[in-house]
Image 1 (cartoon, rainbow, N blue to C red):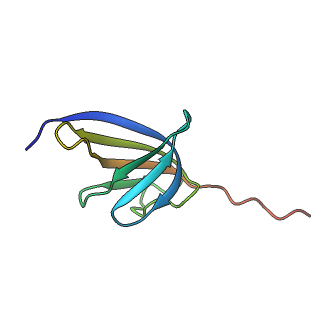
Image 2: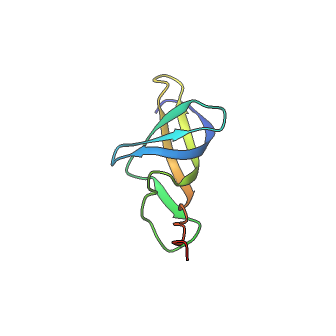
Length: 89
């Protein structure tokens, strides 16, 4: 198994599917992170949930960057769902 480097990706989800998640970071670039089978999703508002985040959610991704392939794979995705605003009264 190739050696890897631990890293964190923080930002807002711009796209997500079964295989990857794209995150817009505070510094500007969009980072693509692979979602492999052992990835865990942790919803700050519902600790028992293992559902993935949605577009617009704020995330902190614990990941490993493979030193050979340069691909970044998530191990844990912590997220806070976007709060839906109440309609004006």
